[in-house]
Length: 258
Image (cartoon, rainbow, N blue to C red; front, top):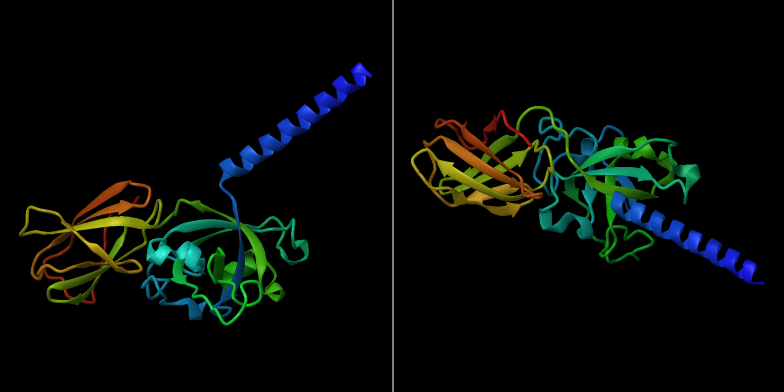
């Protein structure tokens, strides 16, 4: 009896150790559960623009690997530009997943809640649900079109971009609204500073909406420099990236990125 008890105790200890190990591995990997739907049409033309303000997602470097995020993930625009690695959860719906496929998408839009529908039947983006409304080509990379909605596993990852960050000047005199796009590394920004060539001090910009940052200083006729802090705390500086002859509506590409 003593030997049997010892053997059972050993087995239980081993199983507990394995369970804990699996839990630690899962947590350390950073994978979380959500659901995904799609929008924008087969060519993703309906995904252009959006709540981050990027406009043409091709010229801004994001193409069709994009998604609109639910309230729980969008974070009032602070997640704009961030990248997420996603895979269809084949443990739940193997018939709807594309086997062995994963994708990295960029947050470029907001998926608004629909409180007229229940969270589990149409109100997919209602708080507190984490949800990705993906561009259709992106969705079809990991799941079958007919599924409509699938459970996914996702995690925040670094963004790989081609070329430097882009600065698009909008607004009017005393109100510079700067769209910052094609950001690598963390992808999403936490703080931005601007400095005109006639000033020795950096001015803190404020987020107006999405990926648009504002300054209330008269900066016409000055070359402009930007200091950009990503959500992971890393900082890059683009000196005189916008020339003194800039006009509202123009876009300028830097030679730096994260």
